[in-house]
Length: 456
Image (cartoon, rainbow, N blue to C red):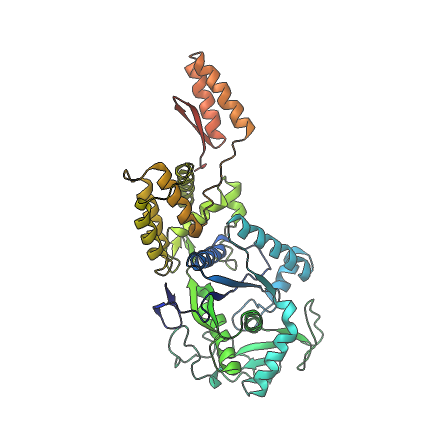
């Protein structure tokens, strides 16, 4: 099995720390707002990774964190905490919105057939551990105190920046971050932010440096090490985490333990709209419920994500999601037959495993699935077996049957009666009525076949 390691910028043969158990950590959502479908693409990629590891007979210990404090609105360690900002917007407490958007995120990933992690870890449950980490960094002379908080001294880590480029890259003051009085280096980041005098925050804790809250980059170190040890096997996230968040996790781990936090760093690319990337801050988002309201299955989004390699940009459009849904429904039809494993299925299984083990090459694996579905050399039973075997990684829930609403069944029966009376004009009107409700009717010698269609 080969995986592209962002840390080394090359595809490497995967060598786990333990023979059968893989430690997998994925950066979770900041629960101040809904996760948009661009965010969800990352979790689909991570789920494909997890399913591929399981397909290779590994057991996976999987952790996803919930950021419910400490993620500021700018990378400069300035601005409001996103949670506090979200609470003002929703006119609720920070704790209420954290619970609400955590629940919504977990509902969304369930709809996408993403397997839940073994552990959900919340930043607010790890305040003592984060304080302990900061104190240890201070003791080792990697942290220093200024007026607004405790900062990590990046100049003390010679390899700082190795994840995204050269360890010798120089930062220009104000280029990446806003200048803060007392900071030694522009790239230095907050470990603990002190609450200003006469300011009352909803989320703040006592600490040796004053009442305040932890910085975003320390929480993942605390939670990952607690659940997986150091180093662990694989750390995942979006490409936007590479230059700052994951770089700063690595810096802390090097300072604390003298070793990298994880051996393999995998990053998923953006899901783009017609005009640029999807972004909450810029107000350009589509959430999963938007797709559902327009008549799309959540798994149509999963199918769409499989059509592009996880390290490639993927363009979202209503046309693309419509085609994805039609393809998904067609695959379900092909998988309806009894399953039969034969000698003829073995070459397909071997090729499929080779493709997914080549850095999760889902586009080629999906192309292989369509190749066998259209093959004249395989029986329907053999095709069905292979569809379900591939679906152990694809996660498209091909066993799911379309439930036809009673209203649609009634309309189809009415149309059949009109056809039996040779009232073709009224039967055609009834067909159009059925189509307007999102279903098609195909007439066969064995009776009508009803299918769910896209509205687009």
